View 1 (tube, rainbow over the protein chains, first blue to last red):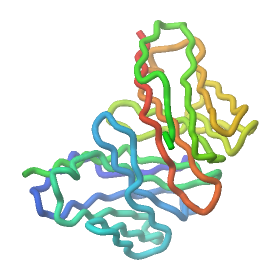
View 2 (view 1 turned 120 degrees about the vertical axis):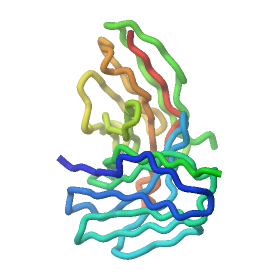
View 3 (view 1 turned 180 degrees about the horizontal axis):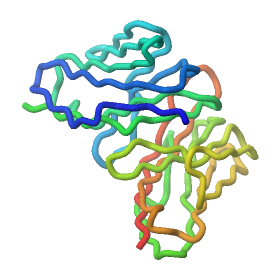
Length: 110
Length: 113
């Protein structure tokens, strides 16, 4: 069974710090990975996608992928209280199906 | 564009009742999905569709049924509701082209008592 595992959390960081969120996956065939942000009571929204080994940066967010280690991470620099949410890691399978991890709840303390 | 809409927002069912969760998208997306999210958990795929008339099971299909007669609509049917089906249900859609973004509806919170 394909699995995506995430840090159980919750994770708390002070405002302005770097938040580091980690994810491992079991399906070696997976080629595409995604980070979704979900505010409490809301639906998930895509914030980052990554397809190649290495880093991908978008503003304060950096996604990192290591296919050899089957490891994906998300770094949030200069964390803000508005970043407080649950972050879901997902991998893509056939028919563009997504397998989600259980999520890591992040709290950024003012 | 309204994006992906879902109705109802909330529903309480009694054990053994049936209901249909509605999902409509106005983006002309080929791919549509139904997920459920239990408290503190990630999303689990129930059913998906790659186009009108084509549906397939996801990870947790038992107790549910779907149909896709049009590109826009992808209703999810619950037959003989059970307490284990208490969850938040999300519908999502995705373009069949090069983008990988799935757009989610606002969700339906279902309680089975």
